[in-house]
Length: 270
Figure 1 (cartoon, helix red, strand yellow):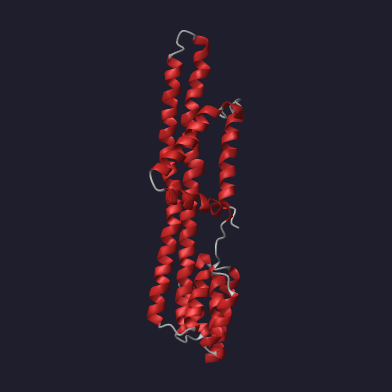
Figure 2 (figure 1 turned 180 degrees about the horizontal axis):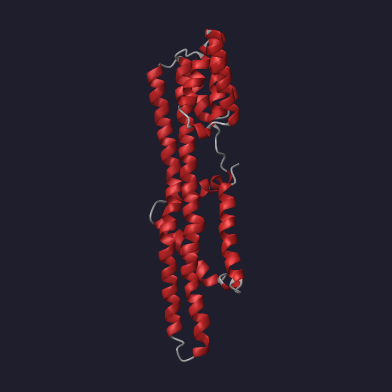
C-alpha cells in the first residue's frame, strides 16, 4: 500500500484547519449541512449525468484503489521474469504451465499458459497488447470520472452561493442577520473549491497514475515473457528489462545487483 493520497489529503485539510484556528475561527463555521449537501450531492449527480451508469459504477468500484493501491516494483517483476527464463532454459517452455497455475496475476497467468500451449509469438504479442489496451482504457474511465467531478464542483459551489445570496436579499430589513447569512452563503463556494482540489482532482490524478504504472508493469511483463518464449538468455534478459525502466524506479539493491553482474562479466572476459 502506498499512503501518498491519504498523507496528502490529511496534510491539506490539516493546513485548512490550522488556518481557521490561527485566524480565531472554528471548524464548525464551515461545517454547514445545507451547502455541503448541495455541493457533494449535485456534483456527483452532474458527474453521473455527464457519463453512463456503468462509468459511475466502475469509478466508485475503483475508489478504494486510490487509497490502498499498491505501486508495483519493477525490480520484483524483472526478477520474476528472469526466474521464468531460467526455468524454461533448464526444463523447456512446457514447464511454464506449472508456473501459470501458481501465479495470481491473470495477465501473467494467461501469457505463461499461452507460451506452454505453443502459441505463436506474434499472435501472443497481439493478444497481450490488446489486453493491456483494454485494461488501461477501463482504468482511465475511473480517473476521468473523478477529474470531471473536480471540474463541476467549483461551479456547483458558486450556484449554492448565488442561491444563498437570494435568501440574504430577502432579509435586508434585518441588518443584524446579514453578516452571518452572507458568511454562510460563501461556504458553498468554499466547499466547491475544497472538494475539487482536496478530493476529486487528487483522486482522479492518483487513479490515472496507478493506471500508468500498471500499464508499464504489464508492458514489462509482456516483453519479458515474449523474450522467454524466444529463448533469451536469462542474464541478458534481465539487463534488457532493466534498461526499459527509469533508474529512479529501480531499487538500490537492484542497482547493486547490476554492478556485481557487470563486474563478474568483466572478470570472466579478462
